[in-house]
Image (cartoon, rainbow, N blue to C red; front, side, top):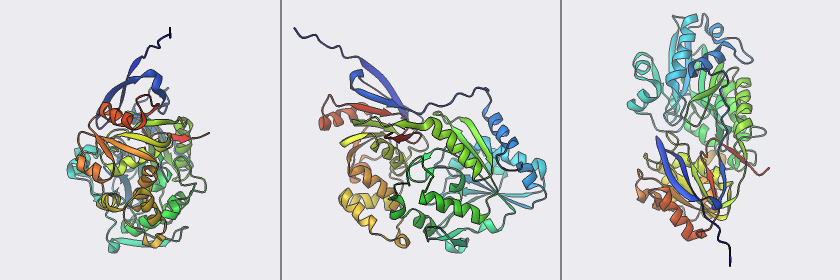
Length: 434
């Protein structure tokens, strides 16, 4: 008589919007659960204390208070609503530090939208706090008007560097941001505040061209010989970025570390810190369940491509990726949406994109390229009860309202015994085969 193996059902949760999606699975089917191991704050410092400590101990730089002393015009570049940087904490500390040394300085805060839409007033209140929004001078970068830009040279890639003309207004330029793995720039933060953050659209398009993205060095966690990163470094130097404050966040979007000082050195030190605990070995399965870390990065399909690229590193051939993302803001880009909707098969789309020269790069081409790479190898199921299902189906992906329903769809494709890998936050980890 055969001995029966008892199946143990395990309960799991995964980030979704401001909460979680819950599901359960037979433990025997789980190949691995991948999540970054947030370092413990051994000093039990508050988030404010962590930031202040970084400002008081800048890396390869004099203190910010010394930099701004006797300067008239100070420009602070901050991130937009699509980034989880807790500016309600960081920005007041930067402003306080500046005014403690130079109370009469004229300060402008430039929101680095890159090619994203403008944040709404309520989104600004949520991100920066009402008091800051009402009492400070904010300018929202818009990269679509060349007359609002200034030329700063030719990038290493050959593209023209046009940036917001406020860079010629300032005497001191500071950028705040946060560091996480980035699927083709290596890491976010640092120099990315300038390019793409405050750059002209054609400059961004050129930096994100198909040839650059196709480089084996343009990948999460890698800066060495990364052509996209090299353009960004050049841009930050050319505009005269003086000082950065970059933070690292845990899974709950709390500040666990901060790096301030020289725009190159401080950023590299932060990247090395993150690489130390975010690097994970690939765990291959037929089905991968992944999130984009919840709000704000799961607000649309465009942003969710980042987590999909991470999941792609863990799927077997012809796998199924279950992306848990609210996508309450829909597709995230008209050009992105229509290119995927009307562009033919993923292989046809990739063939077309790879033939487009750098100076002819189209809006959202980079995100289409990365999504098509994933779609060429996998079936994608978007889990959302906030997104119009027609948007998802028009983009040739499947839709489910919850993870349980998505698993049923995946099992119809790969079998009800198919192995499953769970990636808790596809944006926060670096997957490697080593």
